[in-house]
Image 1 (cartoon, rainbow, N blue to C red):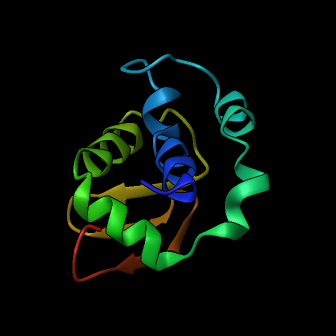
Image 2 (cartoon, rainbow, N blue to C red):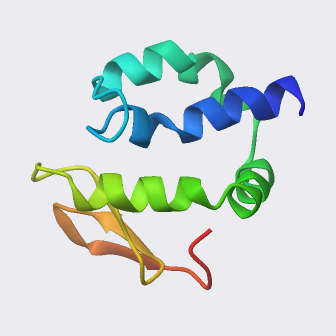
Length: 99
């Protein structure tokens, strides 16, 4: 696995790590720990899509994280391949697949 993919996998696990199923750390701490801001520009949609297809448990982790949210803001993801902002009903986007 490339070094870039290793960083991306850690970033894609932020939802799990910040949930009670994971370590229960804050989103802020998870972002800092993964050095998200430093690495974000080094990968694109293609890399994310490939890792999600080969690590399908990440999808379930993000869905569970989304379902457990206790906030009136932020983004959500639904099993019906939909994402959106909790506080903006016009932000809904539907995709052909959950990845």
